[in-house]
Length: 370
Image (cartoon, rainbow, N blue to C red):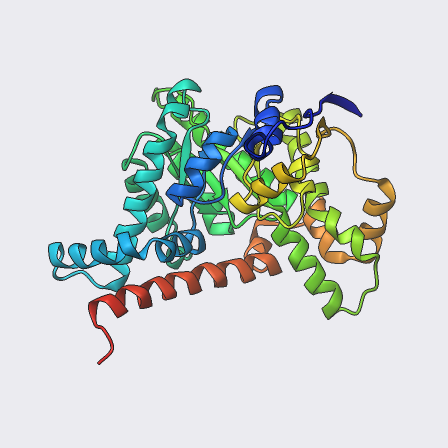
């Protein structure tokens, strides 16, 4: 294990707030993004060294609810400006405005990095998950909202096709609803095909800054559900390493194959999904509260991306947990199986539910209870 450096004892509470993450962003190639477009959280995260942010239906709903003093009147105003728009259309206009505002906060990092960072992710409507053409068209439109927008498309079988086509059409991609090495590799290959098609067509070559998210914590969640369902007994501590193992393996494959996209670690459930990935050319995107906890606990900044997970853990999980084997092996799932993987179903349902909750929030403003 190679230690880069460790934060000295902070001189003040203010120093404690920023020391660890600032040190990491300054001394390693690992980029920090904030897993929220909430303007207050994003501003503080940028102070920690964050150079990107993500948004999805759950995150957007939370940010809107946290600032109803702003978004309540704005929804009323939007309804007056668009008198025929329904709840869903108005809700997504708010998501777009929230995303554009966050993109402006990140634009200096976009310029400084030549487009590699400084990106704000906006997710395609999960209700379009069965229509590749609709996903591509929405992705193209979203990418025009600001030059540093990056668009989330799910790593479903249909989504893989949309990722390639949207890349070809000039969209910077953040692959989402992705939990396995097989999904990450297939999505990265789709981005490569899209970029190669652009080159063959004589289209401009530039820094797209595309990333392939692997939701390590949601993988851990699903494995815990599956072992309980299947009555499998395994050291519960081992299951905390599953997402980390998949992320490390995906990063190694991306590096070996020279993919032009980066792995992004999201859906944090433990600090190892940050600390075990330091030193790699990848993105970690913790929710703001996890960033605060990492700082408060002054976790050491160490180059651990190439330090393998304990082989006993990997061997045990491969032998006893079939769903881990499917998630960890590069050929563990075929694209046709992406949609039926348990974590995919759970996450798509949560995103769809958040859409429904946003509709209800807008409806309550448009038609208050009698």
